[in-house]
Length: 74
Image (cartoon, rainbow, N blue to C red):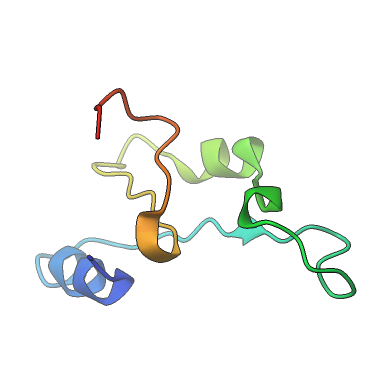
């Protein structure tokens, strides 16, 4: 498993800048047990973080348990 720590050094050592775009927990998450699938990404927020200088986009979740954007068969 690749951890965010590995990405940090690989990006910053050659002079890259990391811009984090967080996932948002469900509103009921503090009072109710919910699936990890209930967390959301604000795609407008993600789009605003991407600039002409963006060279790489790393999508990382704890354990990378699902890849809905992947066409690879496992």
